[in-house]
Length: 508
Image (tube, rainbow, N blue to C red):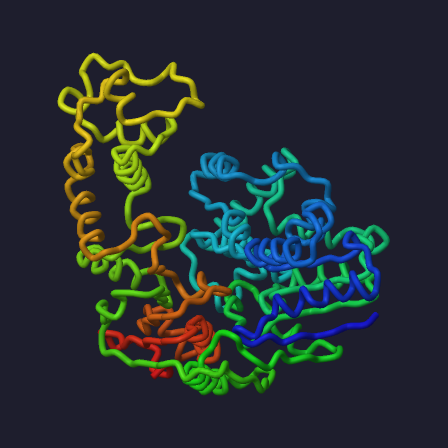
């Protein structure tokens, strides 16, 4: 087996490099696309690789059936169906039986590649499996700490979950990999080429799966960056990547980081003791690094911004300020303007400019028009209207109960929008925020931003008590986290000092 280890520092084009390998295997080595496996840690990484492979290599989605996550591969090879996977409803049933509320780790695994359940018992149960331990054994690890209810409660929950799954042939996402690893080597999928992406984030259990998947491969490419290994607390084992035998390649040119940002980030990461040393350069622009005593919101008047914090609580505070000043932003899967309100405003402004609307758009603003003054009291709604029918403003006036005039702006026409929401949207517009486009400001935890980038980054250095304790006991882990935060910036990095005595001082 020809084994290749690829280290890709931030912005060095790791995915591009891996897709060139795919192209070489297809064009020069005449490998069938069906015999190439591209396996990633997260759905986002797998989807990006698949999308780019299709567009760049002129193949279709059916050709690259093995571009997927490890969990997805296990799901397929075990011949599972959707009904076999533990759902929110399943966890609710177990919660009702045990009288203990349990969260679903599957939801976060689909998004992040690892489970981050809210409750401590699911953290222990899932954490034990990915480390190859029993729940009881993992319970005694120092990192678990004191748990209310103790071992007895944990064993009761673990058994209840196990029994429920066995009775109904149910799996959580981690169970799938456990069972995949039980399959005989002869039953492993037969690939000529295997590419493993984001290898620094793989757990002990996932590395065991990788060992099995590559058994029959002729060439293996394992890519990652131990400097960006920020999921060790969730079971990641980057040392497997760091110590792996094979031909080593370091991608040595960043196409993202400007010189000043590269220098700042490099200075920090070189303080990490246990790492693979990498020499890599920035792109040929100076860029800018600024240190601020507090958030300077005026800095975000224009341009694309990514605002990063170590933990979500700090973003909660910042959101309040952004709303006061009328900034349009997104956090996670939601924007700062309520989705229904947003749709109604845009639809109303479009239709009064003589744009045609479908029934869904029309209903969106009818929800916020006062019956009696804006809509005829006798109007019965649009229950029996053809779904494919398109509407104009005049049609609504003539046949569908609309009483408002075309010259009314949304904040006068849509009277039923809550005053606070209405005020906020008007402030956004006065600030000249373009609410028709995706928000130019994105808020995220550093962990949630991994793989992302922006022209401008505002990095908050506040630490929670828990993160502060981790800083003093596991400094290298926190260094890696803030290194990831710094390296999301293309042109400008704004490092913001904490207003408390708990802050990551090494960022300055």
